[in-house]
Image (cartoon, rainbow, N blue to C red):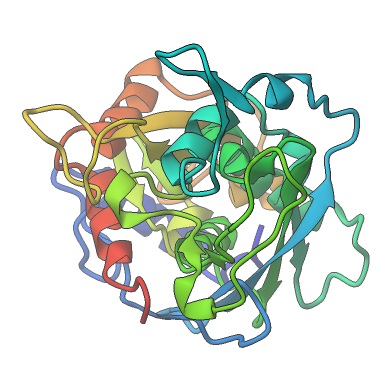
Length: 352
């Protein structure tokens, strides 16, 4: 968690009370589902397949680079590939499949179920955390990789042909010390980097050793606009009483009763840019994790049972209400909800 605020117990009590009202009052005047302004750009690292930089209004900034390398798939069998080399014609003759016939649609069909989670590697580097095995760094990297793996679509896009695949390295660098919990910042930056990722277009058949077009203008996007699928992303949601808030500030995190990380991805087969169609949501829930709020980790949060000092806020104990969890998920996934708004907003940064 980010450093705790310097607010006094009475100030924390006032903030908690204002966030518990109906309607709630946030310190910066935002509505519960509003996000702070951000600045983003893509394709800024020339030696990567995709990259993005994103900066929140509080000055927290992150940069993500995506690199792809061709690797041989260990233990891959060519039997299935050999079985499709010949196609029995109407006259009984056999013919070879051409490279044109092994087009992108055919590759996608053949790739179903063949991707592996190990083809995706995520690393996180944060200032002030010198060790790669620090608990905070490991947890963030695991959370981000969990969403990419749970989506399922990314690993299938990495299949090149029988015996070959792309290995994708997602390198995430937090450029500034975090003023709030950095997970959503890193996730949204990763989303933009993957959205801008281009891979060389294959010119070989799926049963041959891979050959690619050396013209970068002919490169294919990892996430094609025509398919409607997009990289997953994670949103941070906090609850105060029965109210929920998106994109919480450090002060709001300090008085949160519960913190949840909600990871969503696009529904396969819906050709859209993050907008629902005919009342059907274009997003699906990939994972939901609870995170200990700072107050529960602070020594000041421990108090004697039965104490009830007026004007002094104390951290809530126990878990989350099911109704609050359901409200979070519904607000993110419902048609026209927060998830679709974020997806549509991020789409505006594609290629620029």
